[in-house]
Image (cartoon, rainbow, N blue to C red; front, side, top):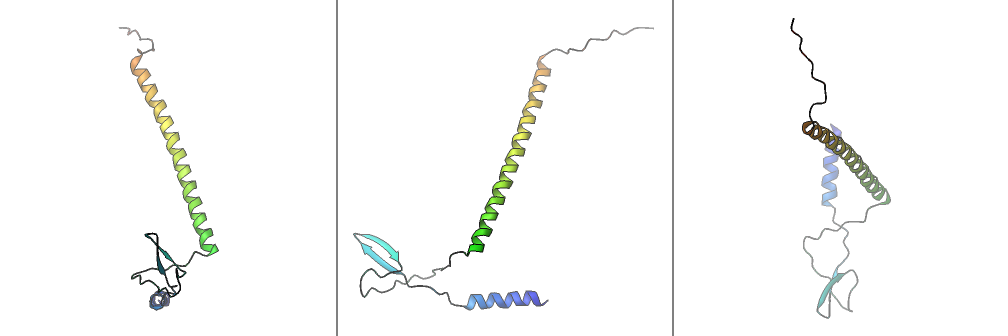
Length: 116
């Protein structure tokens, strides 16, 4: 029972921590507005961006995990596509055989019924 409470406490602590955000500067040059982490001119004030979510770049292990996930999805998709192609090929063969059987007369010899 301590694990759920520990997770809840950790979640509260992480949400309460302020984001270590760098200041963002709004620059206007030749009518174009850009945002940068460096001041455009001396004495430039940081722009106020409400609701800004600052994220850190993924770690090497997170990138590796994402690559593995993408590779697994690609393998699964390739396997599914191969199975679909195989099923389609079999289906087309069955349909062609059915059409051929419907177009051609029965090739089996007819039996003569003998009366006793």
